[in-house]
Image 1 (spheres, rainbow, N blue to C red):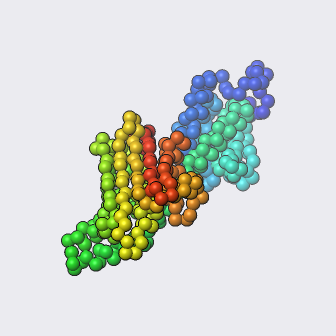
Image 2: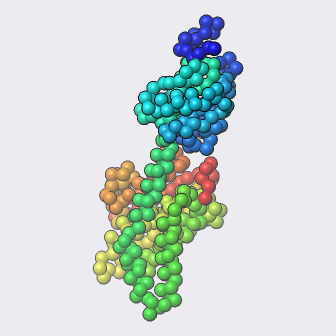
Image 3: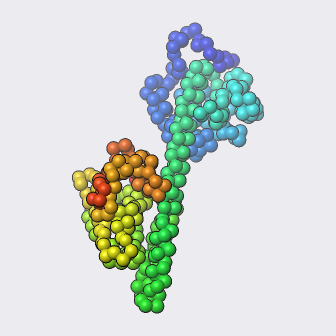
Length: 363
């Protein structure tokens, strides 16, 4: 029986890599699907689909994939499962190729780390096996990068939730407590607003929401801030009805509004001062885009300082803007993100522009 070998058969050109049954179109389709089917890693739910493609492409009896536990998922039936299990165990132990013809088990490495084992059982050439290994390693590498990106996004959301100012929470609770006897109805309303605000800010397993929900969250936040700051804080909120159902990343607007109040308006309020400040929030459609602006007439900042904050080089308490900017760019691409218009003493305007319809962005 022929065995896997690095030397191509004499009747085939040395440069040929794939069995004759697989044309170039089949190869390209398999490459595209492989990346999709291995997104869950070597033990993911779509591995059988990936293995079926590889078995068809290599024209062999069976193809298997093992994770580091040694558990193998198969497409087709191996000629001798005990031999296959032994070869996989050997590869996991030595991190080198193993197996007896016509079966070969090859280590899969991602970023120089052993990730799993690919098992090919059947008559084929080693050059084709090497190509399959390379494709599989690339797909697993992409899967790991996507998983790392998801973890980073979750960490950024946790950072945003941690950004909820303890000072604001203390002041809000103090105001609510002070109204319990003098204005119990108002105290009850603010307590419900406070609970709603905290519940939204700490919601889990949520990647996207709607413009309507985000605007509701900022209305709740600003109602609590007005209870704390009184008539000194003025608020204007306008949102076009046609954009209320547009899906956007979760928790991208509230940090911008909180930044406007904390770093724009509040620094103007000296003790005993009657100075007022205004925060304006607008949401509207411009063609196929959604445009949301958060503007304050506060202290503003030097444009170079705003640039440093968006680049992540600002103070520790300014992580919100950079966080939101990175998340928007990761979802919509480098052309999107935050635009900050500001100058010292002239207030700040932050603009969010995103597509109204984006594949995969669903609340």
